Image (cartoon, rainbow, N blue to C red; front, side):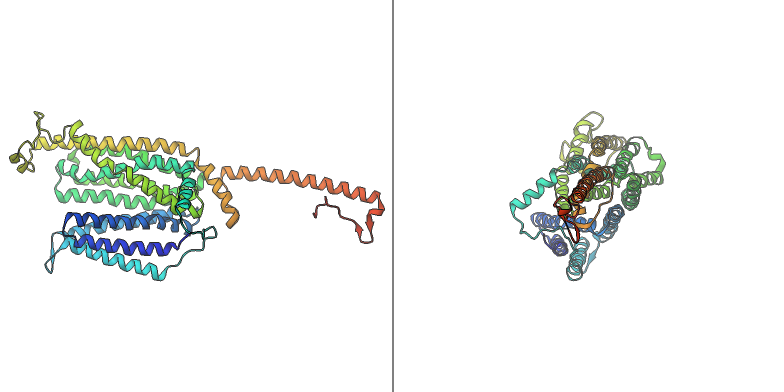
Length: 447
């Protein structure tokens, strides 16, 4: 309906300005408002960017395209965190380093947004609507998206499936409780991010190859492998792997885990592009971000509640709280090895519950997606063929095409019989002919 490149460019400039306000914040209230505006700009850009990527690449290439897109985000998070951390403890011309990090990010974002506005133009979209956006039109589009059964299943798996990623925000704390230094814990957390970067890149190639092997089940099967592999790997790391294996052993385990559990985001984006028509793709990506973003962050509060109230985090051997008075609060950072080990076990158990349970539910939801994805994709293929030619065949669409061919063959046979009957009738009645030959009746093949 509107120029997507302009929306992306303005959103990038908007979040760049908001990022600058975060760096300049002088009170918690201003910081909260600036962070909210920053999230608003990011939320405007992400669904539209995914919509553009889905239009730029064919169905056979979308998996790789989304894999590269997600990998770039992981690389930005990884290296951005490193440079921001290195600046945080310094002062530049009397300005705290953490503020400089936000200012630099804001300047880069604003420059990138202006570059998008000046250099990129909208892609041709034959199905785009020229009608103005109204509340009724927006509601109608939402209803169309929610009627797609495969999308409902993606939301059913996505909301719980995204929650474990918020649970992993406790990983650095758990590593420190296990006895690793702050620097070692940071490196190990970076190992997970590095594995995820590699995994998102490889996931596109794996998903496209799986779809080529089985168009109806390949992508969903690849997503199930990613979810299913994360369950035993995290249980081994959190509950089984001894600290004696050292940093190298944990690094290898975390790299492997990160490279296996990070496939689903790109695969889900590809599936959503397959099951919706082009004019609704930004809508489906936006709705997916909203619904998952509302539910998944709740897991962080659940981790703390489970660790403290169900598994005894923060309680000594006598079951008393270590923070009963101010003197104990001041000495809370000086922990005995036994209490630290107890807290690590409690936090590890809470993290295990909120990693395994959501991913089991996610795996089951993907199983139902096997029954709906091919059907929904075939319906979109039929719609797309109206605008851009024949769609890529699937097991369902091939069956429909065969049925249509049989009907056309039967109709052609009937028309041929009618034409032969007319010709015989005309040959038996010469008066119905003129000097140019038989008169063609209304039931002739030409009509």
